[in-house]
Amino acid sequence: MDDNTYSMGFTTCSIRIRESIRIAEVYVELRDWNATRSYIINNNLLQQRTTSSSKKIYRELASRLKLLTEIEMLYLVNCTEEEKLTLLWIAVCRRYGFIREFVLETLHESNLLLDYHIKQSDFEVFFNSKLVSHEELNNISSATKNKVRQILFRMLSEVGLIHADNRIVRQSLSPALFDLLKSTDQNSLYLLPLYDAPNFIQR
Image (tube, rainbow, N blue to C red):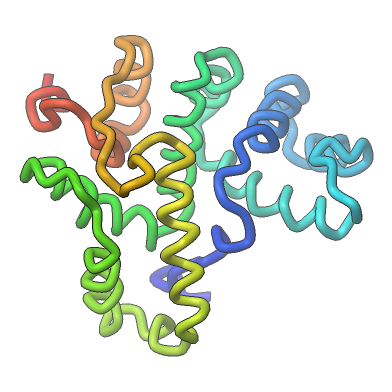
């Protein structure tokens, strides 16, 4: 697959908070992804009816978690629930270019402009703007496009970045998490609608 091609794997499962944290906990204990996969699948820790379903969900969730640094993974399993959501969201944005670019070009820009309502029309504008540079988007059906939008907005809601009415929930980070992200990947801070975003990130 072309490196520029969007992965839409997030449509197979959204944030899956409980399952993601369980995988992270096992990895931090074993420090080996192959051993983590075997332990998770063999013990059905994702609580799926079939092994094939467990493998599918594990593959998608692990592909996100693997993009966190070792220190971020350690922080993830020991931090508050709110901070867990933040780190899982950052992992999702690192994994899926479509989501990352939507956040940077729509959510982040809206926050800077003090426009705190993300509309479905914003998604349409973003999607259409990518049709030239991402030809694969021209080949998806209307039903798949709607699913992409629904899962994207569901994820934003699950991690607390938007309300039920799609209004942005501005974020504040603990000093510890802010310092961690600034040291590991400062660009990750742009993936969150922070209070006083420009000054906060530059400090």
